[in-house]
Length: 258
Image (tube, rainbow, N blue to C red; front, side):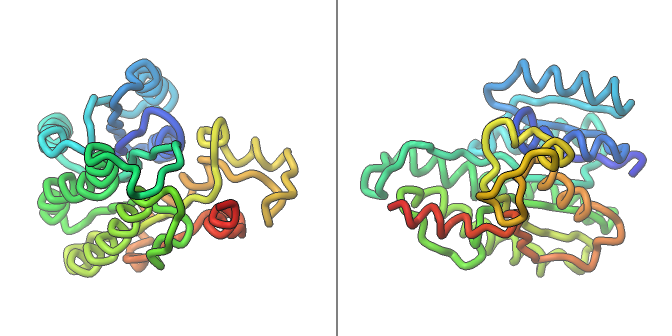
């Protein structure tokens, strides 16, 4: 992975942070974006440099804003000269339970822009550089069963945007396969709180009978799949949606509570 460069949107915290560790461990230069988590982003970048001896950069950028997306890609290309991996981890999520009719237009547009349109803004700028080398890895993050465009009570904006992102992921995979670019989606299960930044070995020591496999899922589980998809020999996997749920029916359980 020498000389390869990755962009991880929303990489300062949570699952994105775990992915940054994983790719840096492979010798990849890492660029993470953040909106408000400047302190976490700065500490992560220094840690990646010290621990893995890789080039690392943190850039304040909002995936919901087209101008920010263009400037981000231009800055990375100017600094590193290339982009090999793009992991679209950023995606706004409203924890407040709202019916669709209760969303303001501002909230709706922000959710759709951050989760769906931002991916379009960024990949449109990134793909031409990947095509030059006829190689690239693009990975999006979804939710349980999003490839079926399911209903998700009180999460209409997020569900609609991610379902659209799933279709766009599959479409881009078809369009760019000839250019050596793979495009896949990874759909995490119910990974929350401190577990988002935890590694797998932490969870294996703690039993959780609410999960089919018997332990809590972690950001490390998701990062492991993403890292696998980034490998050279994963080129036959494209247009796929890979659930990382521990065998649980995450969405079904959530909708039963309605």
